[in-house]
Length: 426
Image (tube, rainbow, N blue to C red):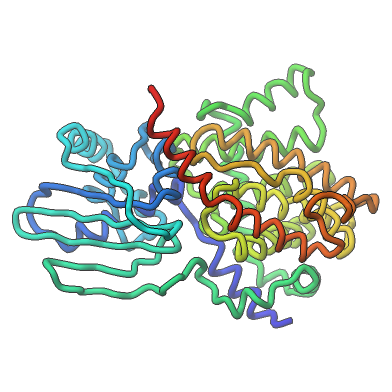
């Protein structure tokens, strides 16, 4: 086990993000393209993969109460700051929103499905009277692989097939055993990014509990606890804090969160359930930080095989990470943490991703409830048997089976879901 490798992975895969990462990545591409174009814009054309369109179509845009790929592309072109990466929309003003809406209404900003097999592909072409610029992002949300200006390639950075910022070799060192060993032995001072994720994502959850965002899933759970309809227990507290963070994020909150493996919702779902459990259990700050580190690393470990985008819901992965973190808070070691993974994947596998939107908060709540239940069972030594379905005796092999389902058995689901989303009578 190499401590520096694990610290490097955390630094690469835990990234501060403002807004849902799919529309934000579109805004980033637009902002980058606009920086090369002189004069008034005549046309903004977005080509995006199925996964990007599905996740960007209906989710709230940060700093606004609006949705839309055409809108976020225009907003990124007008007011985005590409230097800020996933915080590209941090500086937008009310006037920028009005101008972007006008561009959409006038048909200046348009969206098309890209002809690509990549799960994450964004191409933004901005044309003006003086020329054009095209920016391409592939495989992860900030991986700009092409900048073309007036027929000339001026940038061709990024990495081919760079689904993750950390290398495959480094991520290959992640195993369930090595993760637990690292978390138990690392100097707490090396986990400042994990501590920051706790601070940012907890604030997002509290913001969602305090204000009326989206479906108000977290806020409604809290209100029903206060009425005595739901118990003021660990599960309710964890569901409320986690779902509220997703409520806020999916509704366009301008509060930044710490994303995990390219997803803010996954960052929230890997962090807030563990925070809530620590609060209910009276755990020390050190215990909490180490527990959240386990959650993040297990999530990264599974996502490295599962992929950035999938037809299955990514919160099933981060919920599994959270279950491991909660198990650690309950005093569990390697056997119990592995049992928590078996219990989670034997339970929530099959939850489909039908795009980023307000309803994601309900999925976060569901996976959080499952995370707590799985941890409680695992802490008793109870685990789903290998005689059940795709569960193996070895949790690592169960993870491999889960990822095979996500990668191999769902190729047509994304296309079918997108077809349904685009053909609805709104």
